[in-house]
Amino acid sequence: MTLIRLPGLVDVHTHLRVPGGEHKEDFASGTAAALAGGFTCVLAMPNTSPPLVTAEALQVARDLARTSIRCDVGIFGGASPEHVDDLPELAEHAIGLKIYLNDTFGPLRVEDLPTLQACFTRWPRTKPIAMHAEGQSVAVGIGLAASYGRPVHFCHISRRDEIELIAAAKRA
Image (cartoon, rainbow, N blue to C red; front, side):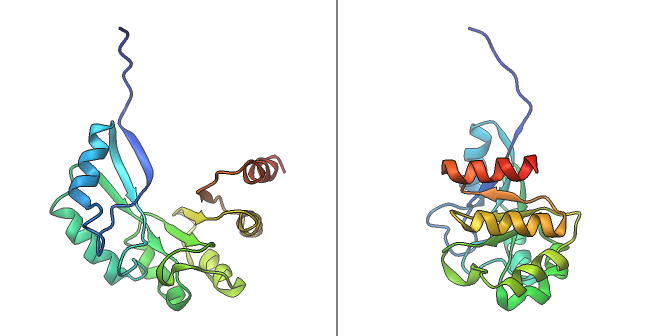
C-alpha cells in the first residue's frame, strides 16, 4: 500500500452553527471532524442565529470558538442590507465577507444593487468576498467582480451552465 502525505488541508466553507444551532454542530464537533479528515483549518459561514453581520456578533462567535476549537478556525462575516455601514468594522474581525444572492434563512439575502455596490466598495480589497450564487445570480456576481476588479469565490456552484459562465468570465 502506498502512503500519500499531504499538508494540512483547508476547508473554506463550513457550517459550524455557532451561535444558535449547536444542536446540529458546534466548534468542538466540527473541528474534531475536520481534523479526522485531514483538515487543519476551517472557515465558518455567518448564517447563524443571530447572523454574524456586526463586529459584536462576530466577537461572540470568536469567544465561543476559543474555548473549544481543535484546529485553526476563521469566521466569515455576513453582508446584510441593514448593516452595510458596519462592514469596515466587521472586516477587522472577519476572515472574509459572505454575500447571499439567493434564498437563505434570516436577514442575509442581499438583492438590491445599491447594497451590493456598497459591499464591494466598503469591504477591504485585502480580504476575500464569497458569494452564495445560483442560476442567473452567478452572472450578477461575475458582473460585480468585473466592475470592481476583484476576485470572488462562488459557493454552491452545481450546474453546468453556471460552470460555463464562470469559465467564460475567466477567459475574458
